[in-house]
Length: 259
Image (tube, rainbow, N blue to C red; front, side):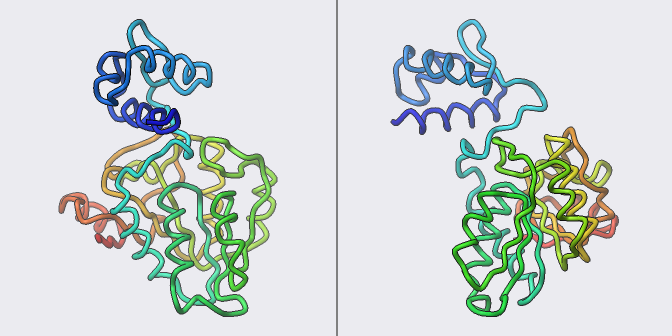
């Protein structure tokens, strides 16, 4: 197993469990304890975990796994969600995409739609995510509007007043939000307050708002609120969502699409 693959696996396990012991991690990844110790030390130097005696822990409740280290957790669910979200977008519309693994899949699903293969433009995509802009910029039928701002290395998103300046001058038909938490009471949320602020402005500038989130993110809350549940028109999630959660969102005025 390569170092990058080990680091991805270790960080995934840490996010899931909160704590890892050296011997436990070595057994699960089938590598030596010395290798795991070295990995933990190097990841601690990058401030991606906290080293403890005999293991490692995450930084705390606000810990955010950088996008480049996120593996394919809930990958099939995210791809189904992405296709369902893409199907809600009409040709010629202006679409806002926030950063994140699910919205990246939405961008890919839009790029694969046959009816969006041509047009002037077939779609206008507004995003503050560098990776999404990079993937879609090679498609001449898409008009790509990238906000300004300062890049967050964790999510590849541009944030700050420079991004505000662009978004305040445009309007969009639909904003698609990638979130880390979505709850009827606490609304949609992100780990970072600057990221949440940009996402909130994107919502304000859109005619309708779609949250794209797998069921593991529902009923949870995170540090920085993006918007109230009542501000969201549609939630697209996976079929594992329970009936009570669907009922609560529906009563709050949010349409739920489970795929």
